[in-house]
Amino acid sequence: MKNIWQNVVTWLFSGSELQVWQESDRCGRTFSWHAYDPLTGRSACFGSEEEMRIWIEHCYYK
Image 1 (cartoon, helix red, strand yellow):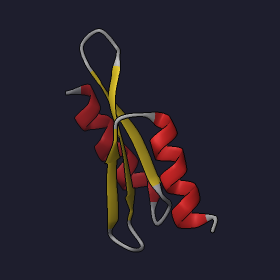
Image 2 (cartoon, rainbow, N blue to C red; image 1 turned 90 degrees about the horizontal axis):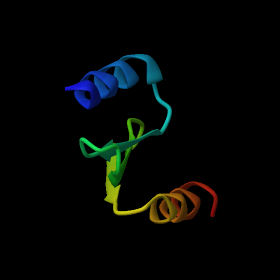
Image 3 (tube, helix red, strand yellow; image 1 turned 90 degrees about the vertical axis):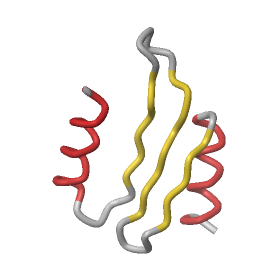
Image 4 (cartoon, rainbow, N blue to C red; image 1 turned 180 degrees about the vertical axis):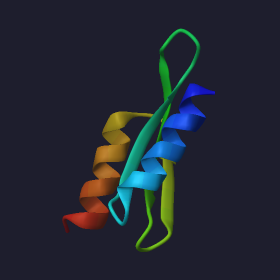
């Protein structure tokens, strides 16, 4: 429930900025990374922070 509330708050206050968040299990271990770009409607999900960073660099810093 905490993750859902955190995502709602992020969405409300982020405006048009790229949104990035992680999902964790009950023990606090991260199991996925998510990104959403409200300007383009593009979203992605990854298994690691490194994959997320590569995607961001490829899409936004070509």
